[in-house]
Amino acid sequence: MIPFQTLRKLSLEKRLNVSCRLKFAICHVKLVLNTESGKPRGPYFDREGDYICSRLVILMVKKKSRIWKIVVIIFSTAIITMLIVMVYQWVVEKRISFVEYREFGIQIPVNYTVHGIDVSKYQDVINWQSVKNMNVEDVRISFVFVKATEGLGNEDQMFGRNWKKLKEAGLIRGAYHYFIPTKSGKAQAENFINSVTLLPGDLPPVLDIEQTYGVAPEKIRQRAKEWLQTVQAYYGTAPIIYTNVDFYERYLKDEFDGYLLWAAHYLQPAQPRIYRSWSFWQHNERGRVNGCYTIVDFDVFNGDSLEFRKLLLNR
Image (cartoon, rainbow, N blue to C red; front, top):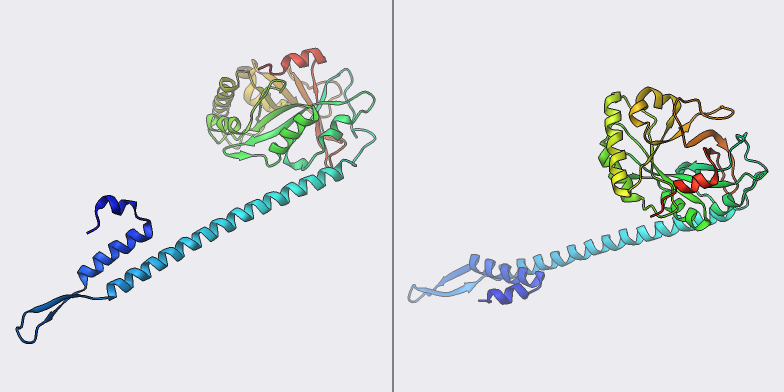
């Protein structure tokens, strides 16, 4: 009999072997009668038990070996895929560094000194140094809002790269969450918090809310407030609300007037037409910047550079 303390120290294969031997030895005892006395002679143990135990151990080892092979294959595939993505992004970034435009391709509103753009995965790889270096009649891109998350558990596939490269290029950055009204506001806020680390010099977090998805206005406002309050409690600063003028006036209105507004209103010559004050204006969705193949949204800040700096996080 093997002591219990010793059995605990044995490997899985050895413990299985021992337990199987004991089990099959007991189950396969043969009593052979003595032909002279008629009394049992033995007992004798059937070797079938030993054979089955040995086979079980071999099968167990093979199964474990197959599992390890699968793990190695999955891990190797993940590394190769990551390397391919990195090489692709590096090659594209080098190529788009030669993408240049003589102008932004749109009318730039006058009387504004702080200009910016906003992007997401749909702009693919962007050479942010080329964006920063572009200068058309003293108009430069000073800030960029990038999409970080959407709904529950979704992160924009270009967010990590954009967030890092913007910092390296010296552009002021901000992150926004695309709101899905059918989902919990608090859970969506946690998704954003898990993805976005804000540092001094960054813009406040942004809630992008522009679709109802069939949800009642009261429910939209309730869930939007959940997101805003959760994010503000975590980052210690009030978020900005992004939406179009019509959506704000129909579904948000007075209850959200205390938040800074980033208003989308195209084809307006001077400013968005809305009853309340605003901080950012998305005035066009078809602009062009160096270092980017696709069109981008253009924005302006409603104030001078000093007022803009006061808006940035300081801790």
